[in-house]
Image (cartoon, rainbow, N blue to C red; front, side, top):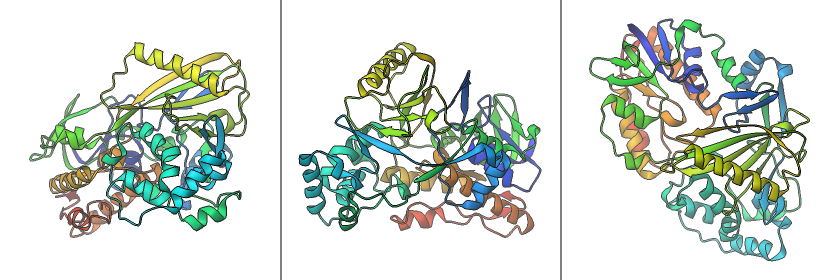
Length: 454
């Protein structure tokens, strides 16, 4: 088979790119049995669960309006977030740093002292960044134990930009002035969520893509960069350009490009979706759990988003990439989770009537200085050979689903423009401005061959 543009991966990034591409000669290949990637939804009876907690915080109203119009406005709720932190058996309002006055006296004073004693040093890793912004008190009581549970690694390994724009700044005067008052709006103060689960946004992206343009259950196993041929589990596909959202290490392996696996570290997340016979806590949407003695780092309540009379939970456990999650281990962890939910008072006599689990692997990538450097070099090498990467895993970064849509549509616009004006260069996605030499490398222009990336 010969195709102009081969798109590898039918997750949010791949679908958004295909939807925005004006050319007709393209194919999306997806290894799974359905589109969506991790943005998928499962049903058991009247319980509707996502693979994990996906709640949509749009910064671009035009993207939100476009997707919501395809779903149907009456089927999408806008929700004012209510989230908590479980700290020493007490629910503290989120964000933690603005509500430290809700802590016991000694813990409150420790947080204040930490804010006042911060050193004015340039942090060199994510752990130092936390301390520099929030002080040791807030770090030790919430930020460090919580993030270590999420990432399942030593935070000193991570780059200062490991969470990008999603990590808040903290001004001491602002925190002190805000104690006891409602928190100002943040990027996720409100979110939208569709009836039917997160997959409805995926279906909205898929809407304009002809079914014959998507090939499911077809995995790319090898890529001949010189001949521009991708070999899948079914066939050989000759392409002019290839756009991939598959995890970058898998792409490099398929393409036969050397890389250090130790640079591309990550965690995996075990998600339990649990349905009970009657309602539990009301109003709260999710709870952060920093306690290292509790297995999970977050528990969320679907039944408090789209109102329901039976409690519907998701529970997330961060695991090391090398941790074995065989059926016996998963069963043991589920029993532990149920015991912990009872101890927390979330389950109080309710009967479990439905359950589901999924392992996200990879889940959170470990953004390090080494990974930033290597990703930049690998993307430049790939782009020079007609291959471009998209998405959280394709670019090995931390980003939102909306970021994926924005990035995919921008790349599609460049493809569209290049078909009309072949001299237009395609820039490579930029890294953090903290590393200008890498940003310059990743902005290197790649000339076009007609409608194809050179």
